[in-house]
Amino acid sequence: MILGKVSSTLWDCYYYITVEVIYQVIANEVAVLKSQLTNHRVELQDCTIFYQQSRLESSSIPILFLHGWGISTEPYQEVLKLLAQHHTIIAPDLPSFRRSTYSGLLPDYLSYSKCLLSFLEALDLQQFHLVGHSFGGGIAITLSTLVPQKVRSIILIDSTGIPTPSIPEMIPRRAIEMTAQLFLPRRRLKLVDIPLVFSYNLLFNTVNVIQGLLISLYENINHLLPKIPAPCLLLWSEKDLTTPLSNAQEMAAIIPDSKLITVEEGFHEWGLWYPEKFTSLILDFICQLEQ
Image (cartoon, rainbow, N blue to C red; front, side, top):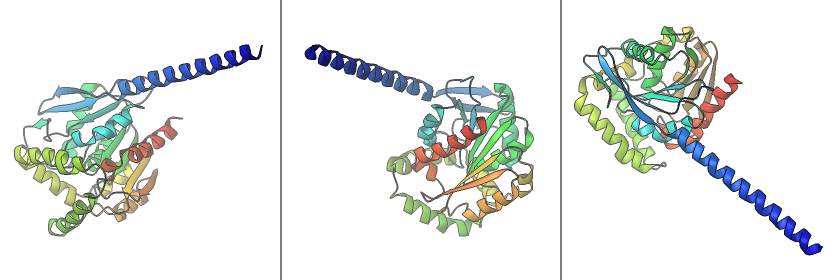
């Protein structure tokens, strides 16, 4: 009798452990499938937009992710895959950067935003959460005021949009940041992946790369901040020397429905070095809005 009870208990334990293992395997496979990104292109009148997209999820509002100056979506792959486990991700290379082309000069944030507006119309994207890092943040601010009815929320990460010091003043700041970042995680990303993408852009898209830098440093879109229609999260590194924390505080004081969260990690590109924390803060904000 006792032996039978022991055998039954062992069998129950084996059964529940087996079910749990199978469940975890299936959950992991689903997460992998969701996080897979596929490559696409859209032909527009003046440009071709390359973009990456995860599986379409009808139950969630997509995230439109805009990368920073001088690079492309390539260095953000880990970030995008983590976000894609929870939301549909649409992440274009900005016009004239890397795999997206543009036939002329893009002189300001508005020009980039109009290109992306045509891109959104081609995709028939009706509503989205808008995430912009650095230069992508300045574009996100402008874009959000062009299609306020489509933007469910806007998340600005160490964004441009408020003029920063001149190029001679910025060079030593960036030198300090780049040197300090050598001691942070993901060294290959810093030493190989980002330099390769930046070198390509500088070589083949020289004019708009330089113009993009000038836009980032000098174009003031402060007047657009009160017009941001959606709830806004500002994510900022306390150590950012490129777009200092004072910029974030100024933005937070002007944007109507805004919240500022600061992190201790990693300077201007902190999200690339700490993707888990970066994406969790974004997803927490979006989740609160969608509840």
